[in-house]
Amino acid sequence: MPGTTMGTRTASLVQRAERLFPGGVNSPVRAFRAVGRPPLVLARGEGPYVWDVDGRRYIDLVGAWGPAILGHAHPKVIDAIVAATGDGLALGATNPLEIELGEAIQVAMPSMERLRFTSSGTEAVMSALRLARAATGRDLVVKFAGAYHGHSDGLLVEAGSGVATFAIAGSAGVPDAVAATTIVLPYNDPTAVTLAFAEHAGRIAAVIVEPVAANTGIIAPAPGFLEHLRETTRADGALLVFDEVITGFRVALGGAQARFGVEPDLTTLGKIIGGGMPIGAYGGRTDLMDLVAPAGPVYQAGTLSGHPLSMAAGIATLAQLTPDRYAALDAAVADLVAGLIDAAAAARCSVTVARVGPLLTVFFRPSEPTHAAEALTADRAAYARFFGSMLDQGVFLPPSQFEAWFPSMAHGRAEVAAVIAAARIAFEASAT
Image (tube, rainbow, N blue to C red):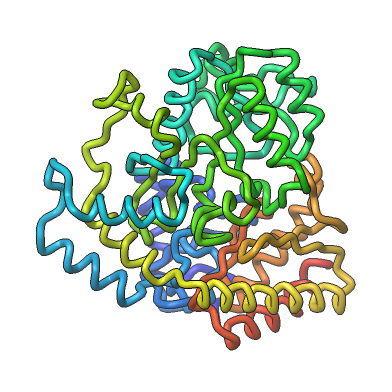
């Protein structure tokens, strides 16, 4: 059973990491500062479990932040990667695996008539917005408060004081002039969208949106909101970009655009399409994508784009994503959510569980948020206590109140029951 203190090897590695990396980590959330706990150092994963370097096992609901939809170290994925290594690594030219994975994505998401692989979701979003600006001849981009679209300068912004004001830089090192090209609006607020387009008619290149908000915890799109974005952008001549880095192949085989029946002009992908290997992709209508070099004037390149190991892992992963497996995952998550709600009620703990398909977040607030400002009223201290209790009982949750949980197709009845049993104790702990 995991304990409240770091094991000997973990403590030693954390000290070494702190001498090497800013904050001791290579991505901020891994530092666990939002939950006031020492960070984990994980050695391996298998199925629904991960193990730290001291041998402690955890039921994993982080799932490498999304890509581990099959669980960790799925044999088919590992075999595909091993086989690909035998043919060499980066070869510097097109590989057949790029074509195979591209065709599989295109079949699942017909709106991606053409696509381009990148090495990360950040690159995919940055490239899609460059393309949108080139296609429209406009500079402004609309995003929604609380949404994370990677760490490119123009998207690391926060809202100004008005409903449709220009944004100011939300990170040191981002020039105000760059941040000023982004307009930040409240998610699920069609009136704000209408007003922004009225004020900046003919100047907005694109609206970029997580069709299911997933970076302030899970927030579902209100009925008609995505449709309003589609209609408004089309009427103004702007483009609609769906950031499906998290939702793509997670909320449905065809992503959120299939689940909600709204087709964007451009889509960005990551996470699952690499099966745990580094990857990103962007794509859309042929007339837009044919503006990308060498077919057109929009330059984007990457030495490791379409890397054979990422392609092999992605092909093997997508091959496992059958309708029956999605149905089983959905049923398991439904049982998990029901159990969490019952456990919280028994502990008289004021929480709500927001869920879209297999994505969920336990919010320590009495009702589901509809936008980021509401999400941010959640009780972070209570979540930190809940997180700590769950970790001590061997359940690894996202180390932040404002992240999605990622159950996998490897989580069975035993794991669901164990998480619920741990939650009964953790909800009691969180209320103290």
